Amino acid sequence: MTTPTNDDGVVVKNTTITLPSLHMQDVSSLLTPEKLDGTNYVEWALNAQNKIQGRKRWGFISGTKAAPNDTNSEEYEAWEDDNCLIKSWLLDAMNKDIRSIFLRLPTTKEIWDMAKQTYSISQDASKSYQLYCEVISVRQNGSSVIYYWGKLQKLWQEIDAIDDCAMSCKADIEIYTTKINSQRVYIFLAGLDSSLDGVRGRVLATVPLPNLQVTYAMSHQPLDSTLPPNAPANSSPESLSIPTPQVEKEMNAGGLAIRAYIYSCSDRIKAEPANETIEHSMSAEVTPEH
Image (tube, rainbow, N blue to C red; front, side, top):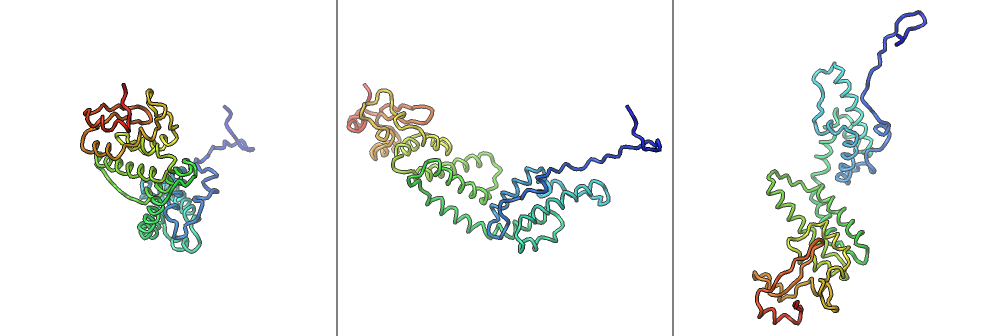
């Protein structure tokens, strides 16, 4: 191996210094699509967090990458370089009037925390109210199920970003998640067009209630695929999947009085008659098998 020398024959020592890896996107690309203007904090914070985490520097904001104690060390110098870089990302993602408020704060964490305290708390209640109003008013109205589903998903994601429900008990988390799932299934079903009444019936007749994703998948399932193998030719999915008021009454009383087919997207559950008297009285509505 040849040792590098200069023109005078003096050995030249390799003094390559390894610097923190910085990609061009870290310097040039915008942190958020829209700048913080005081009214869009929730969307701004979500976009900023995603971009900073993607650049592997979220620890400067979360506090896990705190400044080294020795301000004269190389470690501190490297930390300060990254701190200033992330500060520039945040400040560049604010409009001029707002940027001036945060310009002199020394760390990215202080900028982030102050922005949250200043713009999130006052917005949460009014923003949540607005989002919930939108959710309960959304209807399919002749659009595709995909479009309707996407609109609801966007609103629910915004609600989840605002609602801070910190829970530590695993059992409580599961109960809460199930409750929220049921509410959103009902909202999704309520907004479907009347042409999808059969979907509503199938979902509501499924025990336990399907989760939101399965419900959405069922809305794409052809209605004729839900007919039982021996169903009469004039049977319709709706008549088989939507219980009549009398059937609902008997079911709520604790017993299923007729032969009914309950369909989910993966299986069919057949319920046998509880007694012959009620079954006979309901035979005009549901034809029993022979």
